[in-house]
Image (cartoon, rainbow over all chains, first blue to last red; front, top):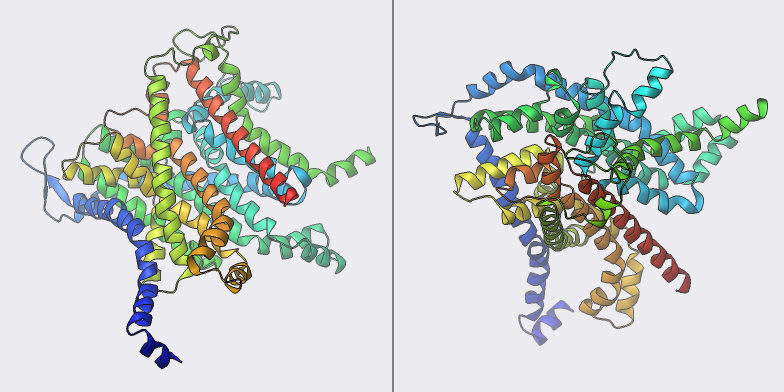
Length: 297
Length: 265
C-alpha cells in the first residue's frame, strides 16, 4: 500500500510526513522563543550578575565569578529568608483552611448558584491588588471594624496593634492569594463523583470518615496545586510586608526590591533573587515528589 | 435549641462559606464605601458623602492616563500571550515529539518563579543590553509571564475534548483543515477565552513585574502604589470598584449567554 502510494505521487507522502514531524515544532517555536529570550536568558543574566563585585566607578560592577557572594548573602540575610518562608507557609495554610470549605460548598452545595459563586471568587482580582491591601490596612487599623469588634469582645486590649504587625502581613498574604487556592481546589472537588461519597456512607462511614478517607484523598491534586499557587507568590511578595508590616516583618522580597531599585546593589539583589528562586524550586520539587502528583503542568 | 443545633450542623459548611466570602469581600466593600468619601488630599478618614468622585473620575492628574496604559498593555499582552500559549497548548496536547520534557519544564518554570525574580532578572538583562525600560518592556514582560497560564488553561480544554467529534467530521469527508476550523476550534474556543480572560486579569493587576520594567511609564497599580503613602485620591477607589463591577457584569453576561445557547441548541 505504502509502496503504491509512493510510486504514484513520488516524494509527496514523505513530504507530508516531514510536515507532520515539523508541525509541533512550528507551533512551539514562537512561544518557546519568547520564553527563551525573555525568561531563560534573563535568569542566566541574573546568575552572571550575582557573582560580580563592585568595580572602580560608582554603580559599576565587574565579573569576578565570586561565588562567595552567595555565602555572604545567606549569612547576612538568613533571618529574612527564614521569616519569609515561615510567613508564606502560615499564609498558605490559612488560605487552605479558608478555601477548602468554600470550594467544597461551591462544588457540592451551591446548586444553580455555582457559576455565580465561582465568578465571585475571581472578581476581587479586578479591584486592584494594592487597593485591596490598603483597604485591609484601614480595616485592621485602630479605628477600623475588626479592631473595634475584637476590643468590644475583650479579646484584645486597647494598646494592641493589628496593623504594622506580622499578623497583618500574614492575613494580607492569605487574603491576596485566596483565589489561587480556591480555584484549583474547586476544580478537583468538582470532578469527584458524588456517588463515591454516597457509597462510603452506605458502607457505614460517618461524615468525618467519608471526608478523611474519600473526599480529601480524591481532592489532593487540587490541594497540591492550590498550595503551590499560593505559596510561590506569597514567598516572593513584598507589597504586603511593605503596606501592612513594620521593620521587623521585612521579607526577602522587600530586601531584593530595595537592593535593586533604591541601593542599586545589583550583585546582592541578583544573588538574593537566585537563592529565593532555587529555594522555592527545591521546596516545590520535594513537595510534589512527596505528594505523589507528577503532572506539573 | 435542639432544632437549631441540627440546622447549624447541617448548614455548617454553608455558614463557613458565607464567612469565607465575607473575608473576600470586606476589603472590596471598604473600597466601595470610601469611593464616596468627600476626601481632602488623603482618603483615609471618613469626611462625608459625595458623588463627586464618581462624576469626575479623571480629576486627579495622571490617574486616567495610568488606567489607559493598563488597559492598552493588558489588551496587547492578552493578544500576544493567547496566541503564543494556544499554539503551544495544541502542540503539547495533539502531537508526540522529542523534547517534550524540556518544553514542559520551560512552561512550568515561569509559574514556579516568584514575580519578583522574573521582574528583576528581566530588568537586569534590559539594563545590560542598554535597553531603556518603558511601555514596550512592560508588554514584553507581561506576555512572558502570561504564556504559561494560557497554555495550562487551553491544554486542559483540548484534553477534555471527545476525540469522536473530530473523527465524525473526518468521516463526513471534512479534510484536516476544515475539521480544525469547524469542529476543533469552536470546541476549544471557551478554553481560549478563559485563558485570555486570565491573561488580561493577571496583566491588568500586575504590580511587581511592572514596577521593575516600567521606566517612566505609569500603570494603574503603579499609580496606586506610588500615591499610597502621599495620600490616595478616592477616584482610585472609583476605578478599582468600576473594574470589579465591569468584570462581574462581563463574566456573568457571558455565562448567561452560554446557558441560553446551550438551551437553544
